[in-house]
Image (cartoon, rainbow over the protein chains, first blue to last red):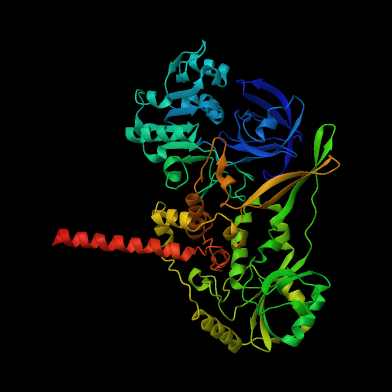
Length: 275
Length: 361
């Protein structure tokens, strides 16, 4: 079975993240080992509805065929996915794309900046980093959301904040509700300059609204980071995931095949992005 | 791979095609309402092999305008995936050099290692391709500039290649499949002088081109000028966003998908159909559109064909057939766009050298 072929998966568990966002634990209907790496994605959908590209929000469990997607019901396909119940089937193809550069992080400081549901692909990456904690240096997570209610993965956020081997900065635009997390008010860019990271040995990983990544990347460039030290995960609407349908093209790049994770300098040279 | 070349009399050629027609779907250029078009042929007599150009290339018989890519059946568990059909064997007759190159370009897109498109591969393998060399040029074509004509040079992508010698054809063969078809004919083998004659025809055609484009530094020049005023001006003054250019382009591969549900509400089909980057919806995502302006969409088409394609697939996306400008209702010409950009580049170089002289002097 190739990643390009249609396969079926079943919903095992559903977790509410916010009012509009849920995490689904899937298992392949066909028994097999399903491998993927952080930052990759599946084309997931339903017959009669269509498909959408959704990244993995969990790590692959060795020897298992389970995977998690975190989905906000905002589009034609995701509004249908939102109504899934435990035991129902979905159609999927994958995994597709090039994920986060997990070979590059050894011996580096890591700066992870996420906005809103952009934490989903970075969550699996963070799990990977924490599993290999002794091989990397400092880890800083800056996570921003619109309001306290919009923060996803509340349990993980609390876990990370409680650890002493990862520095966390959580910020919201509007502090609208009491939270057990230590929160600050402001956009993610406000907190970047105060970080005590050596830009010469740091890799930055960005995922969130493209306009957020624009300002974070430019802020980091201004601080002395090189364009190839900054990785961004991009979102485009795609039909195939295999570099055929053309919808996700940015200049010479297919987001589905060459990405979704790009070095900033590699992708910002083309028009039609906000970067 | 097996290659050989023979001479075949035109009296002999049509009956031979008739024989093949019994086994294969025959597709070739026919005249219809004063235009030539690629269509399925009922009788070999309808074939118009001296055609100039068609609106749609033969791409539509390998990469169909709309086709089924997956089928499902509703079951108590939700649904099951159903098997798909097979391709019908077909012969594509009379494909010009530019369109043969276009098929090679599409091969690069759809037959990428590890990510082969099932339907494309199926139809590509079921298709016997018989190319033919042009004996004249069209008003808008510029294949000599793009390195895709007038003679078809690569030794791949075709089974037969014809060159018109008046009363007979030079027929070049490639591959065992071609050998098997030609074996019963017992033809006269082509000689050195026949190939010279073919080169002669090529040279004669080459001198007739009216449209030309210099591709030496084209990629760099276009990529350096993604914000050149020509994009905005052409888009706002001329482009209607009608998508004709991308529909007639023989290398355009973009598609969209839709799901269709049968009247029994049990059977579902997922279909794909040609899509166009000139449509507003093309680069839409949740919360916005990355090519919201007509300028961005026009620039996407032209830069993709003339520049970014090279980085993606190692060749130009433009094969110089001129269809996009022929069928553009306002006659937007991508060679003119490229030339305008080149002029500014030249002016820049002149200004730079003048400034240098001024500094030195």
